[in-house]
Image (tube, rainbow, N blue to C red):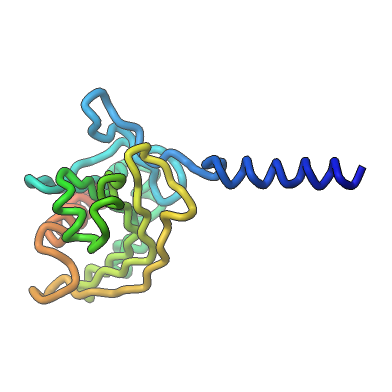
Length: 184
């Protein structure tokens, strides 16, 4: 009996470790591979909004114009000038992944997106990164691809740890939120 229980337990452990039982889809792509839906910070799918694009990357966010998101975040934005969201960065070229993530060519060949959880303070002109998720071509969240981050950067300094394209995306997100809050 003990041997059968041990064998069953061992088999179950092997199955769980060899499959992505904890994987969760973060992005639902359309017919040409562009995201149609992305998971927001609360774990809900939302329409993907492209806030930046160039030859190497596209940057998407969940739909922050939805009335539910605005109602939930409006007070903090008006009173404190802060908001938080997740940002999806699509790697169009492997060379960009190599330069951006400073990882091996083998890893970059697997990666398709980077998702970052951010907290933006518009009054102090800073951005805080709290989590990064590397997303493979299957567009799934996997526990092994999550990196905890605690980095705050200035959005006003040209020598900051945030690239110009990323700063432009943040400016567009902030403007989008300001316009939506005014409508409410």
